[in-house]
Image (cartoon, rainbow, N blue to C red; front, top):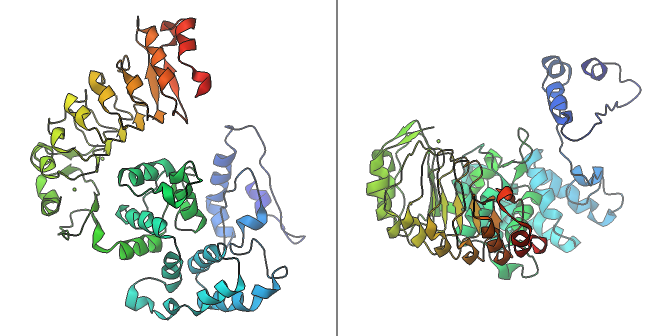
Length: 430
């Protein structure tokens, strides 16, 4: 393949196709060729484009008009070329403005974008390319809030769609009244930000997304003091206006690094117990808490003080059990315990979490059964694994009442179930 790519192309552009069944490694092979040393030496420019099953060359390549040129849109030619010149040859600026213009159908609105005073703001004055600021300016207010919240993400951090949606939901940023006709409002918000080039597909890991560094800078500017993040050993004082924050973990985190959180109402690395015992109870208005990746073996019994928690993430930790006090958190929407390989059981009081939408225990292989009365969690939309213990086959009947389940779903312990119990679960209605 490498020799073919380096061969004579005098007769035009050559195309090499890799064809085969899913899972055979077609993408992996293409990536190896793309990153091969002699390929890098042989081509001045390379591009990697990821397309969906509904492949549309035009849609993939010019953003504003879904066209290569203005031939079919003569009325936009003059104003479009003026806007292009405003982008000063910057590809990111052109893509952002193209994504914006794609949402604008009328010539008069293109004119307003061209004449906007935001173009006159110098980058050195505002710290942001005018084209990016203009693209943000034209976002609906509900998308502005969701985008600004993403300023807590570290630069170059690769994230999954569902990961961000769960955080938005926990922070109350998803407003159904903005799009009453849309069933999955979080997915629609995310797709809108992708289509406007605020999020882009990762070139390293296709299911994940990333924010360009300049887009991340834009998010920090528009969020202001409302969102803050601690990175490395940097000591930072939060404003009294700070409402959302993140901390980039290091190998060993002591309470001193978290002193900034004391001013406000807040990976295998280690977290000193003082942080959990002394700091957490003070954060009474906390909505989101992630301890993912820390080498935590047990949790302190402090969660009764955190009544406002909507999101808890214990994934990739070494905890052995979840405290009963967690199940006084009646507002909890998301509980993540993925790959908690030492987690042995879920408490019997899980039925108290009546607002729980998302429960993930993938990779927690020591859990032998799901507690009884999970049927009370009628708002549950995602349940990664329903485990039926020996002699408890009738517990599958509790799925009957979980009519909102969707997405991937695993049933474990089916050897303990008889046909009558299975019919009562009404899985065909899910």
